[in-house]
Image 1 (cartoon, rainbow, N blue to C red):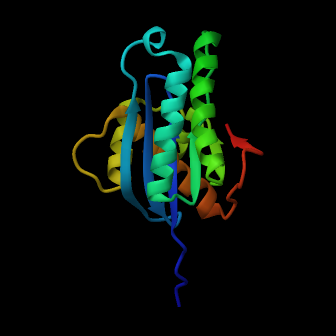
Image 2: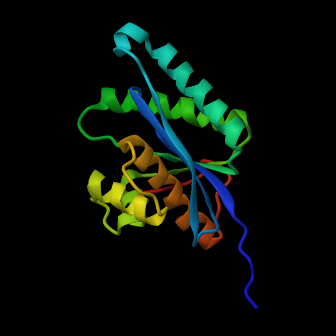
Image 3: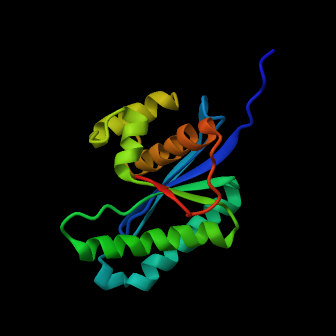
Length: 179
């Protein structure tokens, strides 16, 4: 007799100061279903809008998404640091606003490196944006094309579903991360 798996609603977030993508799925770790996705877009440059206003918008809009869709867990992509430390620091602020929205509403948060997400979704930690888009569409049985940031956010939520739920090792905080 087969045991029914409990489905979890997961919000994946691809943070950014210009565009923050988000994607919500329901998954039991084996089967996943698309619920909703979107992006938070900023108008103008950082100099015109200001860092505080951008962070406030990310926080407010993700708070609204979490309140409306009630995910059980949130998964956020980690900051990738290459050569530009200033960009990484600014991206870290966007992550902080996103994580704060989840913590404010008492939703557990996990984080994953971009390489780990790509490996989990495509099977290649150096996968292209096009490969991520293709696999997200296939895994969620979607047609058409998603915005790049939405596809990345859905990939983060799928990664969390495949990694944490399937393995039965859901993390309840940022106490650890997958790299």
